[in-house]
Length: 238
Image (cartoon, rainbow, N blue to C red; front, top):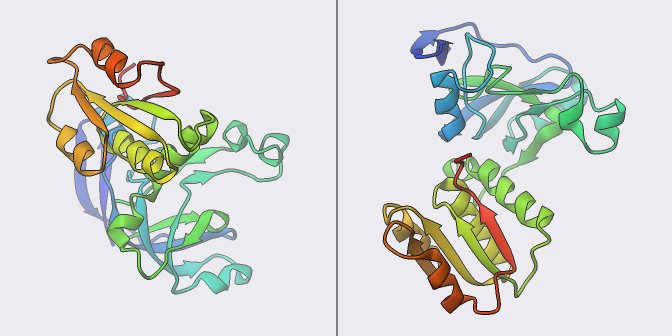
């Protein structure tokens, strides 16, 4: 099969590689769509720890092509998305819901080969069936949408809250979509320039702010005079 392979930082090629075989607990996915994340570019640049050579890609959708054990056979032929996290599921961290602290934790696309290939291996327990009315392209965006949903949940956001979102990239725009869907009000999206703010306006932002052109503090005093309930940093800038 064909796969994008980052041999080492700065060295990326399209290669013919061996078709991977799923182990028990895993499924092989025929990839139909894979989104590009800024962290994939960080892996290419060598700014994020990764197991090179590596096929990146952790935002994906596809069809289950093979499974590693009979108990997962019901997934065969299904349209799916899924988690790119791999954990043991049995240790104290996993059983308490903190699977990222599992000693065996690995992320597909960083420590294991990911979705920039014709086929990729993902954990069966992390699969979710993709409804027929959701396209594969939209399905691949469920991962960043999940980031938005999880962040708003952790922030304690609720219907009727005001919101300010810094950043109008894919995560910021997913935050906006999720905030709109849950009934937050007067949602402001800020970015340094107007480059992506047109998309935020199309998605229903109450107000957009290009911070190189407007004073964000003055705008917020006007829009949210009583203060802002939830502020989200989705810039990706440390």
